[in-house]
Length: 174
Image 1 (cartoon, helix red, strand yellow):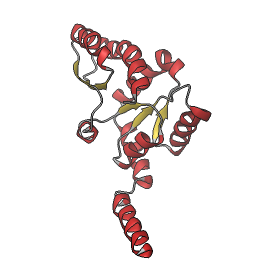
Image 2 (cartoon, helix red, strand yellow):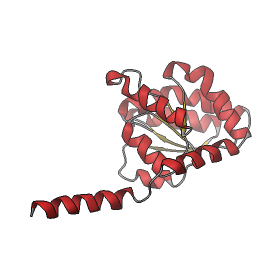
Image 3 (cartoon, one colour):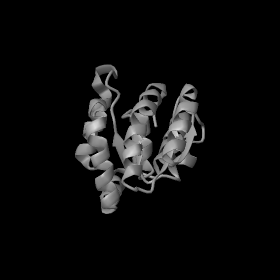
Image 4 (cartoon, helix red, strand yellow):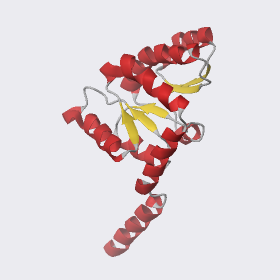
C-alpha cells in the first residue's frame, strides 16, 4: 500500500518476494495497490506463479481491504501507519527513501521501537523481506504480539473525541 511512488516500486520489487513465498508453498492471498500502468505486467506475473491475488489502483474503499488482511506492507506515512495501528493491523513499514526530512524513516523507527510494526529499508527488500515473511508465516504469534502492542496505542474512540472537540470549538465561537 502507498501512494503512487510506493505502488510503483512495490510493483517492481514485491513480485520477486512473493515468488519466493510460493516456491516455499506459503499459502498467501495478495491485495496489491499498483499504478494502472502496472496492472497487466503484475497480472501476468501473478498468474504465472499461481498466486491468489487482487490488484487495485487508487480507491476510496481502503477499509474494505483492511478488513481482509492480516499483514500490510506499506510506506511509512503518518496517515497510513495511524490507520493501521488504529485498526490493529500488523505492518511491515518500508519508508520512502526520499521523504522530506526523512520523516518516513522516523515514523517507521518509532513504530518499530514501540513494537507495533517491522521496519525494512527499501534497499534491504531483496535480502530482508522474505526472511521476515517466512518467520511470520512460521510463527503466527508474531502478528498477535504486534496486535497486542497496537491495542495499547489504538483508540477506537478517536473519531468520537475529535467530533466532540470540533463541536465544542464551534459552540465556543457562537
